Length: 156
Image 1 (cartoon, one colour):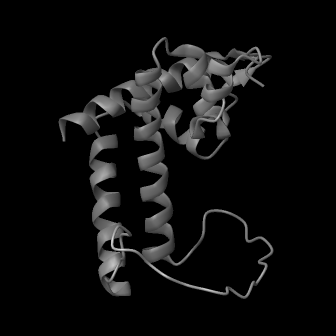
Image 2 (cartoon, rainbow, N blue to C red; image 1 turned 90 degrees about the vertical axis):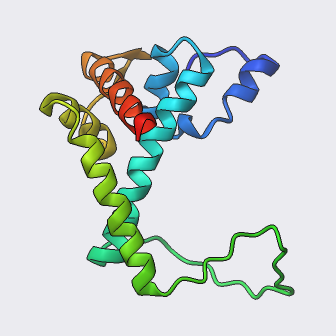
């Protein structure tokens, strides 16, 4: 999809989580440095995660369609000391989701209205960010808005 050659360095780059959707792929098209892609993707993924957690924990809705579930009997279940076990109650998790979501809302409040619209268009996959392996005008606007959001998040 990205038009990269099948070279080892490109194959390693092709495993990036940011290539799962157009919102991440357009970052690879428009950003010169891998660290900038990682920084912007971190801001985008953080916003999406906070939005999903808020919707699930506080509103009681899921943002994505339900899919088939395959039940499997596990032979052995164990946890190591390195694992991060969440012992919070459902109320504590819901409060944390609301707090995190409100923090993101405050960060988004530092952006112009068109920048917010560009980011929400990408989050909701309502905007064509890439066409014929090239970034669209909307894609360039989204990346510019995401740069500002990442700056705001870093100053937090």
